[in-house]
Amino acid sequence: MRSVVYPGTFDPITNGHADLIVRAAQLFDRVVVAVAADTGKTPTFTTQERVALVHEVLDGQPRVEVVSFNGLLVNYARELGVHVIMRGLRAVSDFEYEFQLAGMNRRMAPDIETLFLTPAEQYSYISSSLVREIARLRGDVSSFVAPGVQAALRARFG
View (spheres, rainbow, N blue to C red):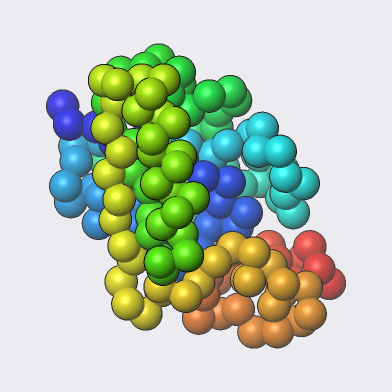
C-alpha cells in the first residue's frame, strides 16, 4: 500500500489544504492527515477541534485518515510505516523554509522522502493565518474555507 503523511497545524483547514489532500488521495492508497498538536504556536483551535474540522471537511474521502500527533514528524511517520511526507508549496516564499525542513528530515530519516505539491491556482494565495486574520476582523472567508470551518471561525471570533 502506497501511503503518504500530510502534516500541518490546519488552524484552520483551508480549501487549499483540502485540494492537496483530495489530489494526494488520487496518487496514494492512504493519505494520513497529521494534525500537529505541539507546534510551538498558540493555535486558535484546540487539537481536537482542528481534527474535527479536518474530518468534517474531508468526510467521504475513503483513502484519507485524520490523526493528531506530537513530537518529530519523521518519528511519527516511521510509527505509521509511511515513507513519504507531503508538503504544500503555495509560492516561492514557501520554498526556502520547506527546502530546509525537507533537508533536516532527510538528514534525520534518509528512508523518508518529501514530496511537494502545489495547490490549484485558485488556492495558491490562501493561508490559514490570513484566513484567521480576515475572520478575526469579521470579513467574509467563505471562498477560502468550507462552510463548517467558516461557522467555527465565526463562533470563535464572534
